[in-house]
Length: 310
Image: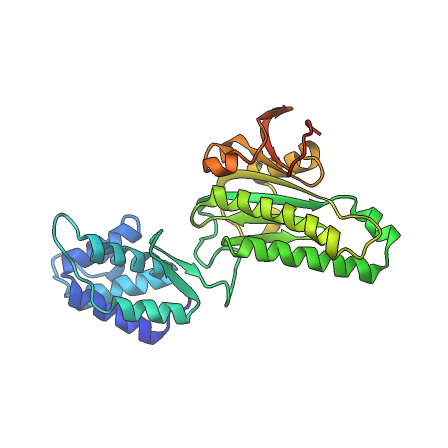
């Protein structure tokens, strides 16, 4: 996130007016691993630093490391919960939150996290993830079945129009649950979830897409035949990359591709056991009993339809 000079100055002022040097360093250590204020400033250990000097260094380090929002999130916790039995009111918090909102990030108190305002922007790293750092995700691998058949039997403009329509309702579905499109290639792609309840959000998105596809085929499809989708839902932990070719190589992503292509029937959402185990009962009740498909234990969603493994 871009930190403008006015916000930088306000954050520095907030730290040195709210906390002493010891607590400012404590805050920095909660955000930046192995933080050493003397190493950062280049000052000898026998020279005491003022709260203002320390605050300026901490804020500039957090900005340089793209961890300014992490700092603010900890300050919000410190303000509300205190530390070691003491209260630490943090000045100018509301003003700083307003500045951050102007840059496209809204504070979610339920998860104590600044999240992208998707009415303004929706970047593939949620504006927060760092290249090469490990994170846990859930994701949906989506594929339009028999794409080449649609291309052969319909006008190019009709296919493009239908696919735009499908992509639009898929996008609407994942954005309202804070998902992100990691890549899309005309007839399918990969959607990821990171913030909040990533397991329920991913499955709810998959179910929503399947149901919206049914409505599309009834009311809006201009192609010669109904459009079918396959969707797999999987989870995994791996280093974030903004490069789609790198993401594709990670084992959990390759597994999602395999499950979608080999073990997911048409117009069905398949869910792996590591996602299923973390779902609310309302969602698990909407899925089939587990089915063993090769090495995968899978659960399926398809309204009012029974089927076996593909």
